Image (spheres, rainbow, N blue to C red):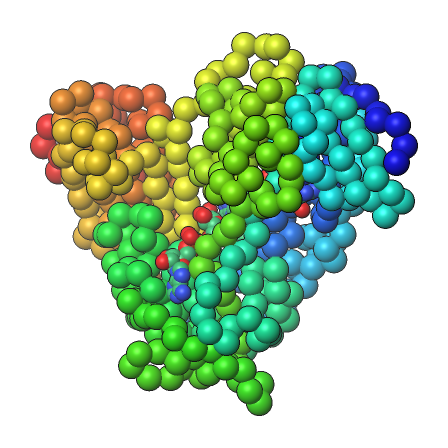
Length: 457
Ligand SMILES: Cc1cc2nc3c(=O)[nH]c(=O)nc-3n(C[C@H](O)[C@H](O)[C@H](O)COP(=O)(O)OP(=O)(O)OC[C@H]3O[C@@H](n4cnc5c(N)ncnc54)[C@H](O)[C@@H]3O)c2cc1C
Ligand SMILES: NC(=O)c1ccc[n+]([C@@H]2O[C@H](COP(=O)([O-])OP(=O)(O)OC[C@H]3O[C@@H](n4cnc5c(N)ncnc54)[C@H](O)[C@@H]3O)[C@@H](O)[C@H]2O)c1
């Protein structure tokens, strides 16, 4: 092993959070080493957000085309995943990270390709193909090792050629029959997309509803849309046994068998925290997250960002946190991290845009909860939109303070429409003030006004 190399900062893991932090710190003039064992850019551009949203874009076009006969003439729709698969391949340069690693290095980050682990405060050891190297970080280490797909312990599953998000993004044709295990954001988004590309999809969710982290009204609207499109949605479904034979997956359920050609497992993610030396900096190596304070500090000369913090498994959260880390490392004023107005969007159709607390979460935190609703199909824009207009707006208010603490928009482009609620929750704009706004006719935003009035505050 060569002598330890001293630098200002080591960033361990170069996904959404680490990449952003590394670039900004290097541009600020610090000596930064960035360590990455796989592709610079991480999960989001190569196996997550970007490929899944490209699939969803293609699927959305197909769904719109299928409404032509009803609304605008005649169209024969023959789905083909090929063009979308090509867009995905082009977008991420055939799974090469030049588009990320070159700008990173141009910003001044010294890129070290290898597997890193903490070795005491401010120290990182990296195993590379040319040997082991220790780095000593004068200012500290930014930990950003992200998550990996985690499969459930269903007998027979291990060893079968099931897909996770890593494999599904390489699909070039839609399988005739697709099984999807898990009805969270990944399972729901991709089940609908593949259904629209022509697969007969069976979506098996163990819990009582799809998108269990969101409002029950959102789950119901999405499930209704899926069922209308022909996705076989089964909730409370426990797969007891998986077998792969003659090119088919046989999934045994308590009430029968489901046979599919491909199986996508989307049952959650596991933080990449094992074997990264957490115990050497006084942290629990078996913990399922790295706890951080509002400056993203996790220990002595140690910051953490992204999915591993457990504050919200989203790219925008990782980048938000990276901004805070950069300020703190540079000794600048830090805006304390605040997750009250956390936003998330599930890109199903209808899209589920949400901010802040759900009704249940608000209740659990002792808020004097009042809710307001509006049905999207009964709103002016919803009615005009016509087929494919399932949706609901739900706002959650703290009646005692007269402000919103949460809101959900399930609608076409719900993630965009929700922006208005996002500002309201984040800035704690009084409901009284919101009701004095102009809501343009006939936008989906007008359903927000209806929901606000329904609060009757
Ligand atoms: C299918 C899918 C769709 C998604 N869609 C969205 C979406 O639409 N919107 C959204 O906001 N979020 C979405 N997400 C979530 C988003 O991808 C993550 O929240 C985001 O990637 C988190 O960034 P991160 O920096 O924490 O970790 P990651 O992106 O996971 O990056 C961590 C990096 O650390 C590296 N690493 C780990 N251990 C080591 C080690 N020991 N040494 C060196 N390197 C290491 C990994 O190789 C990886 O590159 C999606 C995720 C998936 C899987
Ligand atoms: N649009 C977005 O922002 C977006 C998109 C995709 C993923 N993500 C993030 O990535 C992370 C991972 O997503 P995910 O959907 O894999 O995880 P998730 O944890 O959100 O959902 C997993 C689902 O699988 C179900 N499940 C667990 N075990 C099961 C079993 N044995 N059989 C059937 N169902 C089972 C769970 O009840 C749950 O509903 C999430 O935290 C998500 O927020 C975000």
